[in-house]
Length: 46
Image (cartoon, rainbow, N blue to C red; front, side, top):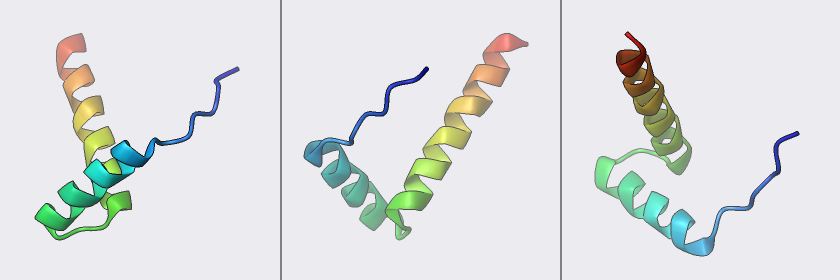
């Protein structure tokens, strides 16, 4: 079973800076990064 891990304050601050730079929410940054990572993994699997 996967362990739950809390986000560190530093990581949250970095997410917030990136969100501000992009003009989107922190949650949207996370979703975009996950989507980009999955796309990258699919590309490597081909």
